[in-house]
Amino acid sequence: MSCLLLFLLSVQFSAGHEAWGLAENYKRSVREQYLFIISKHPKYTWGGAEDLDKGLDCSGYIFLACKWAGVPGVTRTTSLRMSMGLGGWSGKDIDPKDADECDLLFWTFQPHRPNGHVGAFINDRNSELKITHASTSRGVVLEDLHGVLATNLTKVRRLTIGD
Image 1 (cartoon, rainbow, N blue to C red):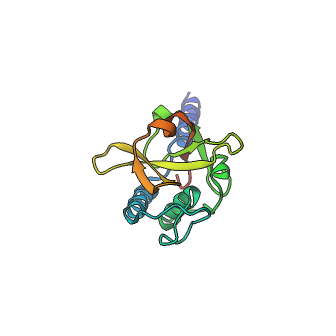
Image 2 (cartoon, rainbow, N blue to C red):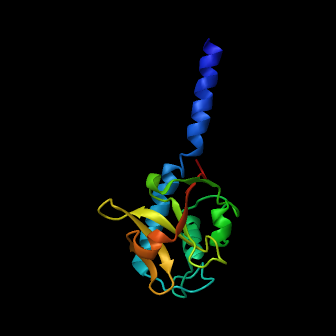
Image 3 (spheres, rainbow, N blue to C red):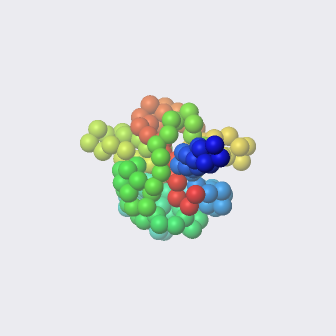
C-alpha cells in the first residue's frame, strides 16, 4: 500500500511539475527586465535583439529580457521557433484563460507567418495582467489584450525553463 501511495504521489508531482512555469526567481527577474525595457521605450527594429538605442523586434525583446534575467539555455531565435519550444524555449501550451505573468503569447497576423509575433503577460504596477510586446508601429509597449491582439492570438505558452 505504501508503495502505491508513493507512486501516486510521484505521478501527481511529475504531472504538476510540467505546468509550474518559470522558477520564481527567474519570473521576478524577467518581470524586472520587461519593466526596465518598457521604461526605455525602444522603437521596433526588425532583427533587433541587443541594443535598446537601435531598437528591438518582438522575439529580440523577449530574448533580451530573459537573457538579462539570467534564464538559462535560451538563444536568440524567431517567434515561430520560440512557439515550438526550440532554441531553449521549452514550455507547455496552455489555455489563454489560465495565463499568468511571464507566459508567452503568440499571434498570427499573416497566414504565411504562423505564430509570427510574440509577447508576454506581465502584471502592471496595479497587479493587473497586461501584455507587453514590440509593436511595429509603437515600439515596446505595455497594454491590454484587446482588438486584433485578442482576435489574432493563436497560442499561449508557459515556459518551463529553470523550474
